[in-house]
Every structure is written in structure tokens, then in C-alpha cells.
Figure 1 (cartoon, rainbow, N blue to C red):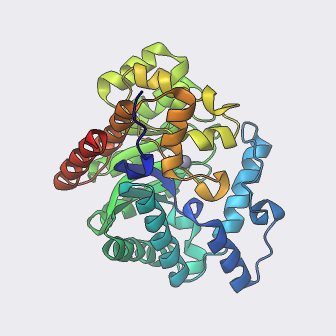
Figure 2: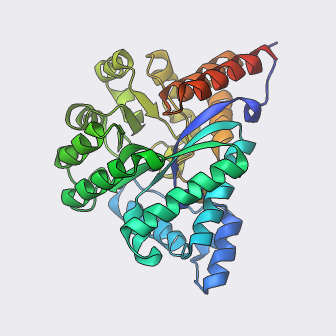
Length: 339
Ligand SMILES: [Zn+2]
């Protein structure tokens, strides 16, 4: 019988985690109390809210809950706490490298403007990284519901702050709105500035949105990308180019992209040779963190420990971690498997 190792001890990189979405539910309650914010029951029930984002109304509800939670982050100390706790949670789940994703625009009104907001966030990441020992970097993500010119401004800002810990540029929110192509200039600015292109695609819409991310935005990684499983040629293209999909199984089930955990096409992507980096997306709203994604692969898709180790290696290889960090993590993955 195969030995079953603790996936929380498996070293891995976490490449798909949103800023407010990383918050501990208990912290949200405390912050809401601090500022007298009345949270909807969906955020206070102790259980993740029931969501269904496969239609626009469901997506809107998800975004509204996210906005409510974000409205409880008002002072630099709240940001510092959020990031420190995200790092602590990640470490407890075996993460050896965390790339957290944020659109600073949405924090700007409460933190004194776009640049102060970004600086507060980068300082918090730097401090949390030093205090916890977890390597952390930032992806700045534009919002596809906003104007492409806003995305360009953000891309320029992200490039300007690259030496302060920004490694990539993303694009999030409702894939059904706007074309990837509208954001091509923003992504060109980011890529020319040395940032990794990691837009969301292939979550709410099918394989064509993944193709758009490759063709129009020259994505090096795809946020989600799971719907590529519906197109074998696209899978081959992702595998040949070594484009990593940041797959978030719990999120997919919570948002109704797939009905059940066993429906998330982890096996299809894995067998096709598409590199994956499992991620938690928004643990605050979906109720599970990083290690749980690996548990899900084991429990519902029969991933052996050797296969889980390979998933962990894929996450490390797709990360923006410096070479020495990658080597150490890869060696630790081997040690986990040998244990
Ligand atoms: Zn996401």
C-alpha cells in the first residue's frame, strides 16, 4: 500500500491568491467590528457563502461580498495584518513561496491614493516576508471591468515598482466582459518592463478565452485556465509552450464552474502535460486554503504522492522565485517524497 504523506508538509509555491480574499474569516469579523461595518450574513455565518458565478448576477453577488470585505481594510495596520496572516496561513500549509495578487486601485480611496496604497501594500509584503521567513512577491492585477487606459496606468506603475517586489501583471474580474485584446497595450508595457504576464482566463468562459490570453497578451501563466480541458489542441499548445495554469479547484466548485470536485479536470490537464500551480484564489469566500487543494487532488482525482510532488514542482518552476529559492524548494519536495 502506498504511504500517504501529509500534504501540509509538501513544499510548494502559491501563485494564485487574491489580496482581500486571503483574509482569515475571524479577522474580517474583528475589522468589521472595529469600523462598525455591518456585514451580510453570508460573511458572518462561519461557513463559506453559497455562490454561483456562472451567470452575471451570481458573479455580481460574489464581487459585492468581496467589496464588503475589502471595505473593512482601512488603515495601513489592517493591510499589514492581512499580509502577515496570509503568510502565516501559507507557511502552515507548506508554502515556501507566495505571490499575492492585488489591484491597488480598489484600495486607493481609503489609503490616500493609488501610489500610497501600492507603497503600503509593498511595505506590508516586505515586512511580513522578513518577519515570517516566507518569500513573497506581488502581482499587480488590472480589472477588466474598467477602461483599458486604467490598465495601462497600472502596468506603468507596476513596472516602476518592480524592484520593490512586483513580479507580474494580471487581469481579473468577469471574463465575459471586455476582450483580452483591449488590454494588449497594458500587457506589452508590463512585459517590456520585465514583468510576467498572468491574466485570468478559461474560468467563466471556454477555451477561446485561454487562446486570447496566449495570442493577445502573451501570457506566461494563466489564472485558472481549466476550461482549456475542452480543447485537446489548446492543451497541447499549453504543454508545448510550458504555460502554467494556476488551477484553483475549490474556487471552481464554489463558483459553480464545475458542479463537484471530481469534475475539475485536474487529470486531463496533468495527463496532457500542462503544468499546474494549485491555488486557493479567495479562501475567505471559498472556505479552504492551499494544502486543501492538494488534498482534493488526492481524494477526488487519485493523485499519488509522487504525482502530488510533481504538482508541487510545477508550482515552484512556474514561480518568479529566485534560483536559489527554487532549488531549495525542489530539493525539499524530493525529501518529502523520500520521507
Ligand atoms: Zn483569481
